[in-house]
Length: 407
Image (cartoon, rainbow, N blue to C red; front, side):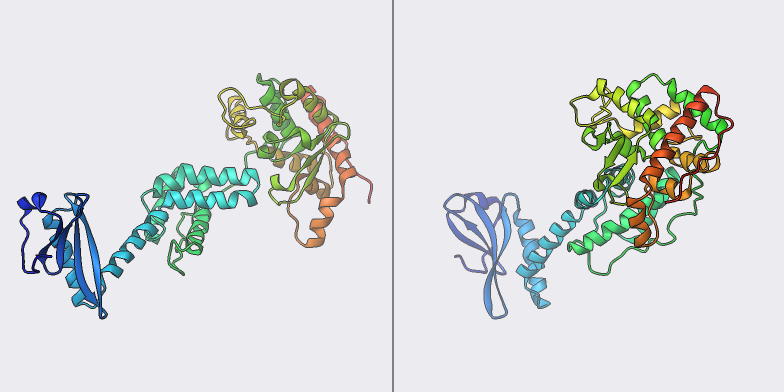
């Protein structure tokens, strides 16, 4: 190697022979047999001789290499090992990249998907992909501040107030995920309480009077698309969640027994649910055989839909097309059944709740609701379906309240 006091000239670097050529301060250019010219710096730290790499010429110029040497020697004066400092910077850069908001959001959704009902996952993915990622795509969970998160949430609340609370919930869960996976320092939670402006959720739009229900029943019966019409009618007849309806599979349906066995994985409460099917629902399902016999799902996807089955948004669109936007939502069929079934048909509340598969307080009540009332529900659902027929035909103004025998 040339003497340490030697200085390299930029114009001569390309013509230097093989070997090590010093530039002072421990830095030298190593010209290898392959022709590669690598910047290196020898130094001592903790009583040991070490070597630090600065990159290769011409990607790293002589001036840039000297800047790196100056920075390294400054670290040495402070008692810091330049190699350890460089490794720490690499780890920080990698952590920041791994903690990029879009990546962590996708990883969090992937981890949660097996434990969620399909509709729960669909809603979370929609909020994350449509609102959170566009607002926070340049953020990293390693460095994201409460202020940045709050700004994004407030912006979401202005555009979609009904989804902002979910966005806040998901964001908090993603932060916890990042901490668990070493992508954010322990204890660095975001303070999101009070971040959102107050929003009156109100009630889900639903037809809950006989007059409103009659108009809805008649409008759906006249809807042109047979697949969407059948899905809407089955939603109305069974009072099940729209996401569960469109994802119904033929293996779950027993037409002879007039039962639909929904597996726990598809249910919001993660408990398997048996739906008592009135004769009208069985007839609708038999009619769907002409469209999806031999297929997995009862309701096939419409043209240009990429989902494996009819998309639940098709039901919402159909209701809007029928003039019920803001008046009756797809989830409103459950409120309609709960309200009209109780007030007009006198169906027992426990029977209604069991058919809706609502969560109950207490382990005993939960177990009871999952296993009882099937006979009562079967009778109640037939009464409900007959009442809807009467509304459509204009003969359902006066209905004798339904009473089931005590168990």
